[in-house]
Image (cartoon, rainbow, N blue to C red; front, side, top):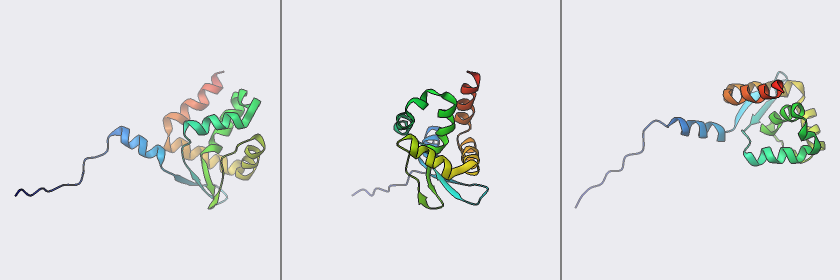
Length: 127
């Protein structure tokens, strides 16, 4: 009778696997007020939901780009932050985050996803 030994997979992850892992994981940032904001890269559906939530304001490129960081937010100091489903909820989340929260979120996004952060804002500025 033969003996079979199964070794665990020990190869290093591929670059694609690393990117997929990074985009699916939650990460946190701390704003200047000391609040811990947990973030996760939104999927395509969340981005479409943002456009629907903003309604006519979604046509305003500057406003839309300014709102995108808010849909990364999962929680603020441990309190769940549901994704906004209308303009009123978006405004409430913006007010809750404040300038301090947005600064921390934008910094976290730039550090975690440098290619996306550069291209997103540049396209709006060019217009």
